[in-house]
Length: 589
Image (cartoon, rainbow, N blue to C red):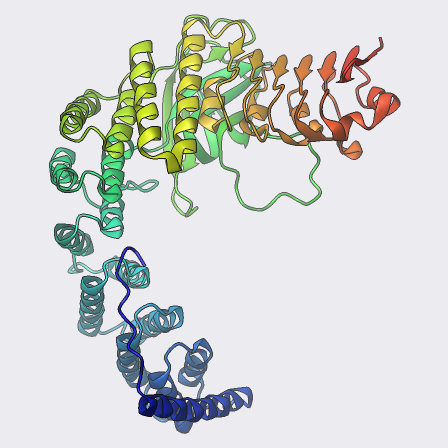
């Protein structure tokens, strides 16, 4: 596992086999007796002793660990204090871990025991510090043997969270962030290819909702250190993943990218999906509603979980009109905890899609001067590396991402990116589909940027790019488009396209879209739609077509065309032209 050589298995002698068989017979008899004792709810010192012996012989027995938890928490099972029993349990667990370090039930039981000890020792700060020190030493020893033991990493993470909660009100609490940083540094210095240690480093610098990062490391110094790992092993993935995070994702919280007005309604868009709650536009307060992605009626009630979306509809508490430059403040949850909130602020003029006042507006990537310098410097370093290692696909991929992030996708930049993708595809044919998707996304963003630069008017043509999906951020960028052509791609669903509420004409012919035709009826402005040669079906109970729908082409969708003339005309009463097969056209007023 993880590239480690499996140890040779030594064939036991006949005498050893006989001894093992005898041990198994004894253990099976003991296990059966213990299961009977648990079934009869027998909780006493004898059961504690028997389960201890059984688990020392075979620690991979979740039921017996569960029985021990019942024994430890039942009243009257023993005269010993619970804290003393828990300390004895820690010794039993150490013996179990010597036999097997990757058993879920052992680690779960240790987590349970540690949490109980924290409760019992709550008033004794020194005892808790000793417990922490013991547990951290254990984790360090196990990670020194196998730095990828995710059971140990999870246990350590739970332990540190427990200590942070306990130490919040303690003036002399330990510097847990420094402990994490030291462990990460030590493990990486031992072996640069340590995904978990790099990930721990990102967590230390990751800003949480409503909070500052736990630590602020010097990005330039971190990049210098990363360069050592890259030049040591240019094809190691873990170092490049941290490099990508440092250069492109470091300290990036969701931000409002733009806003728009459509049919008198106000829409707000973010750089990535967020869980938003309330907003203030100018002086008007209101709540936010995620832009719907389907017109289908729900057969089950909406989940109590909050929606996450890139685009949101603003529902003001009082009637208001927004035309000029506005200030927007949105309360959002940028993490999934739901406990802390942060705010995102935007100042600018909305895209007025009702009056077409947005002709000179263009969406641009916002980068600080410091960020631009970092990206420029890293691009130069990667170019130098590629002169030495021209076949390093991770360097080629990093260069492409940095080029797209540091400047608009102009012709020269795009040409370089496409050349890199072709090179990577030949070097790494196993992931050729990934590179094909990246190429399609790059071509799409070029078309979107050109369309935006031309005043966001006219057709948006994304024909034959090989697109398999449209990302939510790309759809948000295209909000306001009236005519969209996506023919001859490989789309499997409508997805974020259903959030393009401004669409009047949509063409997605010759894709691989599955689902119900009724999904597109979330687009209430639709007048012309070409859905031909897909794999769509029709649920007769869910139809409510747009009032202005005039023409729809369903040719090649066998499940729909089998309905016939009469049913189709009933389903599309406003359409004056309905195409549903080769040479089959239904026209009516």
